Amino acid sequence: CAGAGARGAGAALERVADVLGAPIAKAALGKDCVPDDSPYTTGGMGLIGTRASHQAFEECDGFLVVGSSTPYYDFWPTPGQARAVQIDLNADRIGMRYPVEVGLVGHAEAVLDALLPRLERKRERSFLERARDTYRRWWELIGEQAASSGTPMRPQVVTWELSKVLPERAIVAGDAGTVTAWGGRLMLRAGMHYSFSGTLCTMGAALPYAIGAQLAHPDRPVIAFTGDGSLSMGMGELATLAQYGLPVKVVVLRNDSLALEVWEQTALLGNPQYGCELHPVDFKAVAEACGIRAYRIEDPADAAGVLREAMAHDGPCLVEAVTDPYEAPFGESLKPVHAEHIAQAFEKGEKAAGPMARNLLESDRVALSPALREHHAALARYR
Picture (cartoon, rainbow, N blue to C red):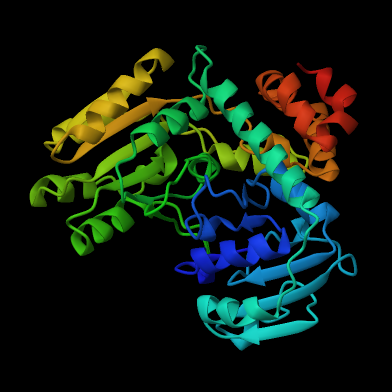
């Protein structure tokens, strides 16, 4: 598992992964440590991660943690299942999330390079190949979902089309909420960077992060990828973009909801949603009032063209994408207890049980989710 501390060590990570025949799962803050099209990665981990990463954790007997203190350690191997080694610059973090046999303190790249000559190349590659096959199937699923023509639009439409037009060496600043999950579905290529307020998941960080990144790197394209709940907390900074002519591109997913809270209240607590609806904000009009070019996408058929035009614009601009608040951000990653809690919330009267159940129980999602297979009958009653 590679986290933020593995940034800059991508080549070393891939060399070690090749020798061990091991997939690289990435914590959310480590998304850019290796590209998403690397032949070794299985993508993200945790509640908003990929089924491929979780399958690898469930089946592994060896576990290397590199520069990560992710709170989603309950998705890691069961203690005692795998022998673990941890690399971290901070000695206090060794063993903090998972019991390890060996802790190595130092910069990730230096430690990995020193470790590499001591490793024996594993000839058996089936574990890596199986993980990669599941990862391929996961991306196929995202592509199928992105081909949807329904409205309200699925967020996957936006991330799929945005991935295609991200400029080389792009810096993407993400945000907290379901947009964190959809940001995890952006396909980053080599040379791109991504970050968000991952330690405390503070909302409203994408736009100020993007402003700072653009000022620090005026020669690189910068995108703020945010949600309506987050942007409404700091949309006055749109005027900052206009005042200084910063060519930041703001992509906001508008679903008129604190949608991650909906899913966390149901999946983690077993309760119906409470206090999650947002007053609709016309972000396109707000941006235009600040002097910024702005677009709105409601029809999925318009997404590719609008995003391409926005990325090509030579000044600041905003794209408001109206999306479905009940598209599940973690259907393939649920544990059985989460699926059970969602069924309990439905039983207690969750008002959006119908669309939530339909989104969760698509046949392609169930094919990747043992938890949804286990609780299919309880959830299907509300579809």
